Image 1 (tube, rainbow, N blue to C red):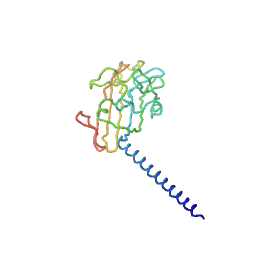
Image 2 (cartoon, helix red, strand yellow):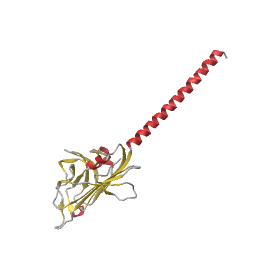
Image 3 (spheres, rainbow, N blue to C red):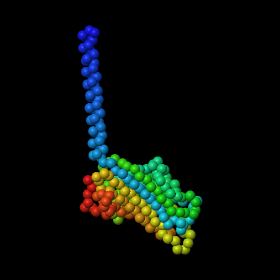
Image 4 (cartoon, rainbow, N blue to C red):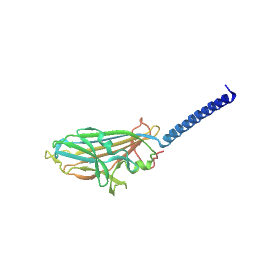
Length: 230
């Protein structure tokens, strides 16, 4: 084989090895950048659960629908749209409901004879979360009026068609719980517990309660303004 051909082949091999090395290094840099970005933004898990109990003491229309707020961080819904159609639910159908204040969750009950209902959803998201965002709003949408805490108040909508089946019905209890947690980060729990007396329907503003804990081994405690989230 002529020396010029051997020299040419050697150069081809060297160039190929250099190209492979550059691609490998570049890939490692991209992976490291992606991992660093994920670590800096933080990964959070969340769970959302809602229940409406005490309904056995009432009757409704052939289709009765309760409407409740969605979980949020920094004023933006954690999930919405098609996610609402695939929630785990008991005795109801979940669906998105458009209101003048934004999207909410509908709990639709079939039949006039009502029974307790519940729905839940869990997942994760990747972003920074500050104490201010947690303290500002755990649910959306909110009414334009201000709540006692100074923030836009979330609300529920109770159907006007509810009718008690006895002269002394029990109140309806709406329970909404939203929890977020991240590895090496505090856990946060935002809760709404609303007792609705007989005859009270329509738009009902509710007041979320916010709790936190530093680890899963601790009980949740109220989030105070002096506490911070890093």
